[in-house]
Figure 1 (spheres, rainbow, N blue to C red):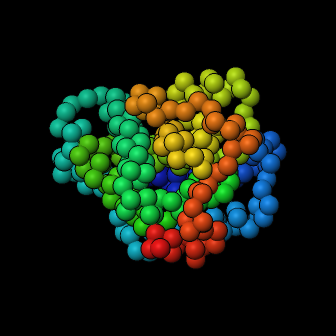
Figure 2 (figure 1 turned 45 degrees about the vertical axis):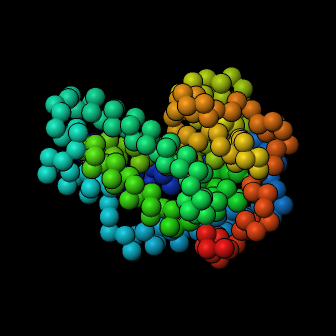
Length: 262
């Protein structure tokens, strides 16, 4: 498969198809009962995603694939200076980029100026696949710049960037879903990747649990750095999701956009 074809599928069919699949599966076998006004909540989350997609396409010409291509042509970055087999460069870059995203996520919880934006994601009062695309536009722009900087330092191969971006989206969609997995499958998957039950603890109203299970895809970093919670204190069915502070609540798109400036 050529990189151009892969990029075309990444930008459309694969993420959209997986998103719709998880939306269907979580409706067939939900982990938690649907909250009141679930349709309106999901609609506003989806509207924020559409707005973000439009803004980033119109206002931000920066392409991570373009950054990787420039670094490759200019010989910039670690993996453009070290001769390694293509497969190992791709594998290592994907692993390192996932590690970098883990620390980016930690930073959004530790630095107040970043939390002002990231709290829009956590203010969702329940968690399903639409939560995966509920982010403030400013946070997405900062994330894009951060990832671009990581790509320049690494000199990541284009294919590694495409694979990483795809896994990041698929991982976030899966971990935020309200899909009920068999206990044995959840336990097996947690040997390598985050699961919906694992990430749900991160969306607890308890700050001690919010500061755990940061990983969107690979779960190793949480286990390695002591930020791993196995089960939320109140259990998955009874735990409260969202933020406790009333002034942090935001349900409509306009409230989400204004939340960082309160």
